Length: 484
Image (cartoon, rainbow, N blue to C red; front, side, top):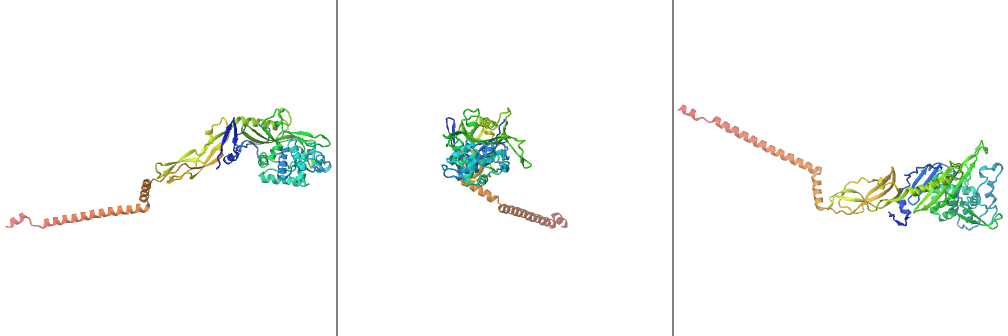
């Protein structure tokens, strides 16, 4: 098993993530003490894989424009030349102003990046920046149309197939831009899986969603070109939500949306909208990925469109202030001893860990609060070799398993020949056959002795009786005198 090494340089940890991931599980052990607006929350420390905050992680919710994360991912998976021009066909724009049967009030007033129909100088690269920075809905449709070979429904199927392949179980996409549709939903956990997959598999993903601004090519409305800026207020240096550690990823919001009633759009009774947000933050040697879904459009003070930013700022402030990485177990650390029979010079062998273990825990929590559960091991019989496997050490906190670490014997223990001889004698003497033989021998001996004693006693009795008889039969001297 790989060993985890951490070097500290001016309070900055450089973490070997792959090693941590083999030793840590994403158990949601801690929760913030404050309330959150968002209906769904999933926050993970990417250095360790530990979930530090979770709220309704598997509840189906509406992602709004965070849908575009999947649109970006499918594009990255299927396009080889990002400098290639795209076709800005009318089909990519029509649904934003459809009338008649195709009319959808939820698609009117969609956010855009000022790309024009039939514009000929737009590349995949331009569209991806327009998609992730400016949340351009027309950019989403342009990508869907081109990657799907002129069939946007094909692209949407690709989105759903990708979600299943990644492991999403409660996600379904019905469009590429995230404008409201009851069949366009996901969960905080699923969206975490999608975002994490994009980050891990495609380095270009963070380049697109982590940029603060981008220069778009010129068009008829902007003959000198124009600059688009991120919608992420946490990346805006002028915003109260600014955080220098935040590097993206995608915003999502809608002020209101309309549902159908009896098959007709109920525009008289629009539903108040919501905010969704996915961000990544890296500073002070720690890296987090945070997903929040469906926070209310208005906060408690009546301010609009900022509740998701409020949640993210509070959660990041809390995480960076509350948690630190601590070493709980050292490599080759003795955690128990086991009895050894016939060991030369000792009757114990130490059991040690094969790897070290670090975990993210609150600064106020003593590492001794983590429960160490050792395996039940029977007595060893010498000789014992160093490195023999002895089960696993399980580490638990608040009933959650943090990790399991393989254990092994600490050293060689030779066989004591004298002890072995004694053991053999003891073993032989203690065997059922020998015991039975001894019992029979003892019983036979006792019987023989008793028999001999009885025989001797009988013979003695007989001799005594004979002596008495002889005495009785012999004439006495007195009688003889009288006769004379």
